[in-house]
Image 1 (cartoon, rainbow, N blue to C red):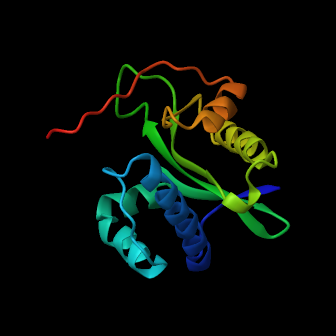
Image 2 (image 1 turned 120 degrees about the horizontal axis):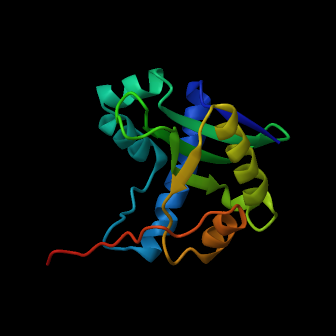
Length: 166
């Protein structure tokens, strides 16, 4: 198993297909929040449309990255990670924080220990990059993901709450 940063258009398309799969799974959990985009081409065009110049600059500077996990030359999962706090931006912060925006295991590889393998690689990758801390958010309904993260020492520190404004 290896971890790589997305660098080519074909790698990008594979990652986007995993994100679309996750989007479809979230429709059942949060039907008012997530919608079905139907086909891949339309979803991919929306992703590119919402990518701003600031997003591109952060990516070029290495502050945001799509990474993926590969086993036997097959992409088994991916993550979008963001460098959230930098010492030069906040005088009171003295460490680097990596925020895991999304962590996805391809549905064909779930329940096979792949999440544990991939997340272990992600933590090692973050350490090698000089990060002191990792944070993420996860749906309270995703008990398998919560169990995975807790097995790596993650603890609930904050409660993220939302409400519709009808």
